[in-house]
Image (cartoon, rainbow over all chains, first blue to last red; front, side, top):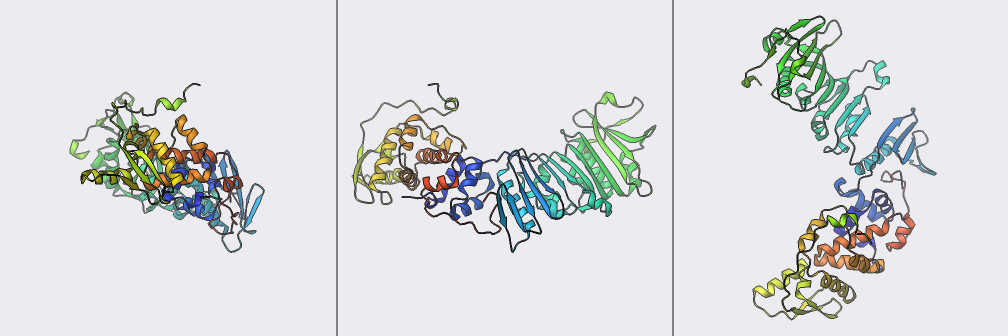
Length: 302
Length: 177
């Protein structure tokens, strides 16, 4: 009798295309050839697992749990070098259990095509980069990079961001929330986020102005909150943006946006070890204080 | 029975044109069986259509087509399917090729599900060699439907995979293995 495993690859691909996620996982186990075939298939050819939520939680030094809501969870034990799924325990004698966790997660994310939000606690760029590129950039909308408490105690408040900012996932996302001071990343790389909160170690006023100009023309822009440890060329602020408007504790500027709304820039200067803070937000023209000047910069400046 | 919900979205075949007299040719299988088929049915196969066009372009009489990679039993099934679909608009199959879910018409469902799985695999493989898009679509969808809810062991039995596969403890073994 003819066997499924001996069918031409294009036919197998068509069959997999029509199968559900669970059937593909089962098919993966029928023979080594089919397993290799499925593992080598592009994610776009595979069905969507439609997990509501995929979580990795480090329970303690020895125990990691991968949870696939609402279906299942898998436990990994570092000392015992084991993975436990339901009643089945697999021992990995010669391998680091972390490699198994990452491999399994890669397999899960190959089928997880509808991830709209990534929430990750990390203290190294490599940790974010082990997950972020696995997600579908056409679907991912929100990136949350959190600082696990463990690293706050050690005074780690910076994270290398240059590789993260080059990913398609970063470039296509709409919302960003990052607990860290970005190292090696340019403030211009957040101009496509509708909503953003991030800190930078150092930013020049010139680059901040490039960001402002980009946001003035960005119709989906809502709010960007940027903390800056070292604001370079800060004396240029009043040269580029004019004299700020003062009212009570508010120091800032108002600029006309290309869609008719107003960009409000709320500036909190840094002092001692506190970083400077800029909050760019879109407001309606009627919400501008009556005595404030809304600047309309010449087009060549925008 | 009420029609399936998605059948309404399915592209409808074009109105059949006034039928010209059927042009019948002989088709020979790899094991020497000679069958007869209407050229319009054979045109559903891109491979055979190219061969037929070659004959027509050179004004050579087409008496017999040789299909070297399909045995007689399977070729008969292929020709039966093509005969049933010879009036179809080729755009239907092309449109369905890129869909993740398709509706199998009742005649095809009955035709394909009555076949033992081995014969169905042979039929799909023949459709692949002869490049018959519609038959590949319906055949693969039928196989996928038959896999629904099956365990690994049931799939092995259904799909003709005799030896149980021993899972080595390597990094390529995922959580569900």
